[in-house]
Amino acid sequence: MSSKWDNIPALFANEDAFWDRRYWDTRYQQDRTTFEWYRSYESLQPVLSKYLPKDGHLLQLGVGTSRLQVDMADDGYNNITSIDYSPVAIQRLQDLYPGYSQQLSYAVADARSMPQYPDAGYAGVLDKGTLDALLCGDTEAADAGALLGEVWRLLQPGAAYVMITSAAPKSRLKYLQTPATPWQQLLVYEVGQQGALAGPYHCCSSSTGSGGESAAAAGCSSSMPAAGSSEGTLQGSAAAATAAADSNSSSGGGLQEALQLPQMAYSHLVYVCCK
Ligand SMILES: C[S@@+](CC[C@H](N)C(=O)[O-])C[C@H]1O[C@@H](n2cnc3c(N)ncnc32)[C@H](O)[C@@H]1O
Image (tube, rainbow, N blue to C red; front, side):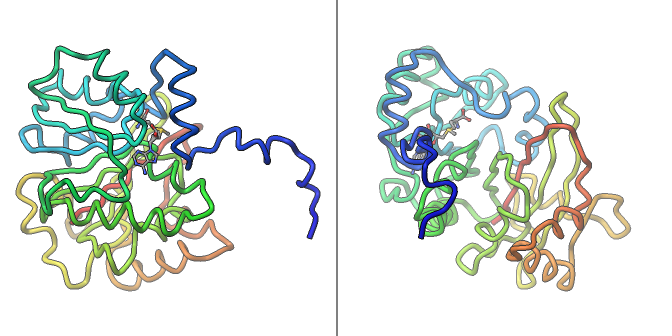
């Protein structure tokens, strides 16, 4: 069946084929500069430092040519492994930042399948724009499921998957909230363009979970909202069910409003998923 979109060349040129490794290799080969997606460390630091322990082994998925891990090392993080499935990007970073070999390591790996890394081997997993890239493809549900399944396997109990994106809860939570990834808590922060920080907004928590009591290393245990907390919250089974329903609803909008995210002019969201 034809549509009015059929003759728009850009749709067929795969100009921005973010889900395809060849796209990234070509981009990194052609563009010799570095590129930081979404946000730099400065504005993310308050959230990252809360959930990612400086002395734990962290894994960053899809590092690209970002310097986030370099800034984190300068801020005291001492063990970050950053992966990307583009060998061009990994080589670029190894060439650019040779002085950080004590704190930073790099590897070519596919975030959807990382059997070389041990179960529960990481005190946190960081993702800035990588799940986003996979979700641009035709096999987005399978790709997201594979990535998140690996994240779940690699995280220590109580540790957090911290994901930075511009995707609103109504489109993102359906990938995060699955039976395969029964997070103890799922929180959202909003970071405004000028650095204003709002949240955490509590999307849900596991009804069978321990409430994050085992979250010794990360900030997951300390971020449970107190009774009467002024933080935005959707805690409790009814609210969580509403959130889940809204996130799967094609009409959309409900959860965004339910979470009462402030209307910042241009913002990014940080999802924190506590195992
Ligand atoms: C939008 S860029 C973000 C780069 C970097 N994190 C940043 O914030 O600037 C997405 C990155 O994810 C990488 N990527 C996409 N799918 C991947 C996968 N399955 N495994 C590993 N890396 C992947 C791409 O090569 C690209 O470098």
